[in-house]
Amino acid sequence: MFSLLTGLLGALVLPLGLARAGGAGVTRLGGLLFLVGAVLVLVSIISFVVPKYTFVISAILSVVVLGVVAARFDRFNQGVALVTVVLATVAVVVDALAARPAKELAEKDSPLNLPVFG
Image (cartoon, rainbow, N blue to C red; front, top):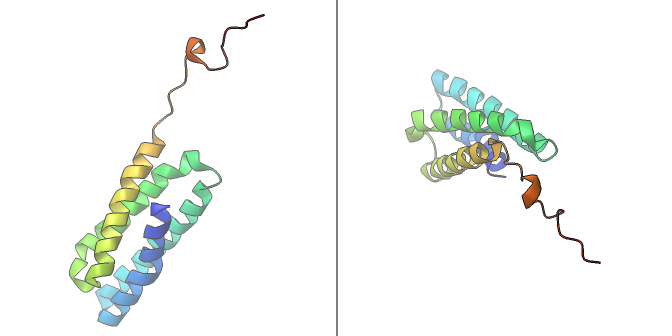
């Protein structure tokens, strides 16, 4: 969910703010941010269906969004940029935790291994 919100902010809100600022380097940066944000939105939507393999990709894309926003923090609307930084940081942490392999239960600890009374 955090990755989806970060992608939406990266694809829609932040490039519009950069377009108002103007400049050739700014438009390339806005295009990059739009592209990374759009891919992040797609990966986040796919993660609802196939979560196992998309968490690492989502974390990497969130780091890219975080890097772009941090590099040009002064060019963005400060409130939107700050929200994006917080969401991207939370998304990286949550995706990194979700990407860890799950620990399997030992057979003796399984709840299906209950004693039978009869």
